Amino acid sequence: MRIDILTLFPEMFAGPLGESIVGRAAREGRVEILLHNIRDWAHDRHRTVDDYPYGGGAGMVLKAEPLGAAIEAVRRMGRPAPVILLTPQGRLLRQPLVEELAGRPRLILVCGHYEGVDERVRLLHVDEEVSIGDYVLTGGEVPAMVLVDAVVRLLPGVIEGASLEQESHHSNLLEHPHYTRPATYHGLTVPPVLLSGHHAEIVRWRRHQSLRRTLLRRPDLLEEAAITPEERAFLEELRREVGLQGTAQQASSAPPRLLLATNNPGKVREYREILRDLPATLVTPADLGLDLQVEETGQTYTENAILKARAYAQAAGLVALADDSGLEVDALEGAPGPRSARYGGQRNSRTRYQLLLKQMEGLPEARRGARFRCVIAIATPAGRVYTTEGVCPGRIAREPRGSGGFGYDPIFWLPGQGKTMAELDPEEKNRISHRGRAGRKAIPLLREVLGV
Ligand code: ADE
Image 1 (cartoon, rainbow, N blue to C red):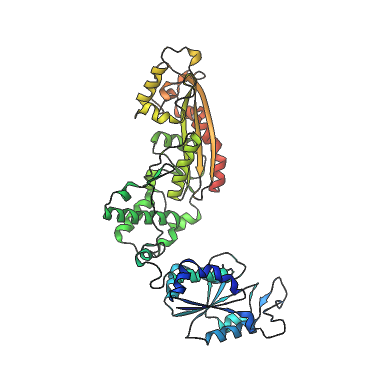
Image 2 (tube, rainbow, N blue to C red):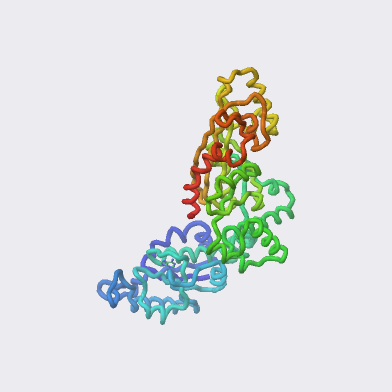
């Protein structure tokens, strides 16, 4: 392929087009990129290429004469080719257009500059107008580099064929997540299916992840995606699970979604209550079919809460709320603390609190002081993180009482209430609990990040 680029700044192209894959493709002769300085066709004393706009207004306009002459001269230098003007007013550059352009033997790219080009150049000398996105850059040079990069990597022999077929946007779906070694990074593990060696299962998992990501992040792409009837059914199911009613509604009026990053049904119930005034749809990992194994390797509640919130926000493409909480007992110098859920290596909460009661055996009232602490982390898919904290003071009871709540609730005595945490009704618990307190502090932050 041959690409001619008309620009006022040919030096800008040396780095981006000389390096890496595009540079290699040029050296291997798969693409020939020719730069032409528009100024070479300006024949007045000052080699003027721009002038003030008729009718007044800010900025300068690229003059018709030198630019038109440059385009026609370059056009005659080789075989016929479309002349493409890079401009924010053009057709949006998306992968199907890139594929179409990659099929042409020659392209002529014109980089506009200043406020724009004289309208008569568009009418007489330009065949197509292309924009790389809905924002305005200082000129068409960077857009031309983007277009060249996207086109050249599709040329035969430039990139391995298999990697092109799988990639994002090829089938109008976003790509599945990728992992490489190590198997654990900052406590985040690789989904077990990828280590299973079961090829068919891996292909299926990846396809489902692609569909899920596209539905959650870019539902607009699904309208043109090549999807089997079975996959369509899978998407319908997923839409129902996450409470999506289709793309139009989501874009306009549906409330934003907040992911509660926990698999503990007791916590989910409490958060639904604590956050009931937040105008958002609360979804759980199970609702999204998300199965993340986040190892809580942090030394503090805050670290663990952030680890979880970040991992879920990234995986789901949603704002995620995670917490880490624990019981701090004065007589045990603050233990079990952040290790509350794994205290003594016990798997269930009953054996954990029984172990704790045993350690506290015989201690007088004055030495039974304790508190529950909860840290909430809110993470956005882009990686911003906010935290809040709530504390609920109390004592360690002498024996478990009550059947509400979860975890250490039956042995946490609240002198002000004359009850254990497990004896409170849910509303009262949320009013005084560590989670309720941290959760209420989180509401203004959530309003801000969700834009509600
Ligand atoms: N020139 C300035 N901004 C542009 C954009 N977004 N796309 C193409 N050309 C441009």
